[in-house]
Image 1 (tube, rainbow, N blue to C red):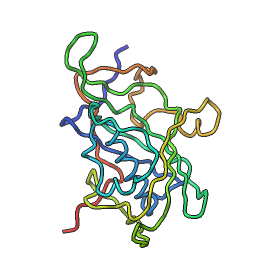
Image 2: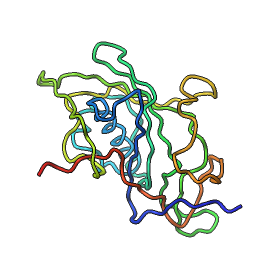
Image 3: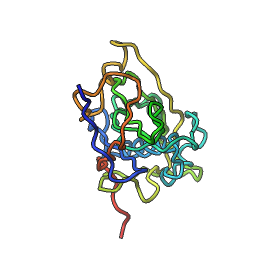
Length: 226
């Protein structure tokens, strides 16, 4: 049976983020803004597009323990689906949040090893059974002033035009895999929304002549103040 292709991107070098609304996190809150900006910037930084990180990201990550960036890796194309599944205050002003990222609609330009032709890796059909953990502090800045990340950040832009991190700081980011039926496994298991129903259930990369589409971001970011 022929596998249904993903929609193709209208232009190369495009990556968008679509977030699931969750009872564990109000995406329009200051915490929602901070986590969205951190996670989206981290994806850019570790995926061959360090120049695409958001204003203020370096200051927000100062001193954080994170996965190493890969500035020489191929830029990711397509749509990343993200869902926050747990969030709680673990100490005074310190928050721990867990999120899942679904990468079925992400890929990059490669040479197809079977044909030696230029092609795109278009995600894979494997199901996500891992989650990322972010720990951050709602702390004042070095000047002693507490600045909250702005709330109600939404729009048709793919990135914020100004610093939306406030004075808060990331302490650490790491990923963990979970066996079926254990903590968080059932929260994250599955595929990205709108993955073709007959997309092969394999962790092996799939190759195609076109990149997966970078769909409009959700909830996106507002335009710069006029």
